[in-house]
Length: 196
Image (cartoon, rainbow, N blue to C red; front, side, top):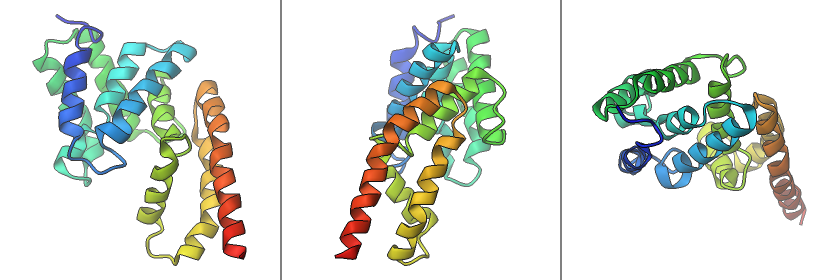
C-alpha cells in the first residue's frame, strides 16, 4: 500500500489530465492545483491531516467528467475508484472519500471535520484571492448573466463582501481578509470609471 504522500505524482497527473477539459473555473491549471496548495496550507495551520486535505482538494472536481449535473454525487466514488486503483493506504483513502462526500453534501456552513473545513475554505478562497479575481467575474457572468452589466456590477460588492463569512477556519478567514482589498479596490475604481 502506498501513502497519499507517495502517490502525489500520480494524483497530480490524474488531476491534471482529468481536469484539462473542465471550464476555466474548475480546471487544473487555473483552479484545482491552487485549491490543493491552499488546502494543505490551511491543514497545516489548523491541525488537520495535510495529505488528506491536499488529495481531497486535488480530486474535488472529478465528478465534472460526467458534466455539471450531479457532479457532487459522482466525485467521492470516482476518487475512491482512483485511489483504490493506485493501492492507496486504505485508511487515508477512506478519509479522502469521507471529506469529499461531506464537502459535496453538507450545508456550506456545517462542515463537521477540520479536513472538510480546510478543503471548503481553500476552494472558497478562489472567489476572493488573486487567482480568484477573474473567477469572480466569470462566476458573476454565470450567476448574474440575465442582468444588465450595470445591475450585475451593483450586486457584485454585496456578493463579494459575503464571501469571507463563508470561511470556516480562522486561517481561511484571515487569508480571505488579506485578499479582499484587491477586489474592493477594483470595485472602487470601476465605480469611479462609471461616473466619468
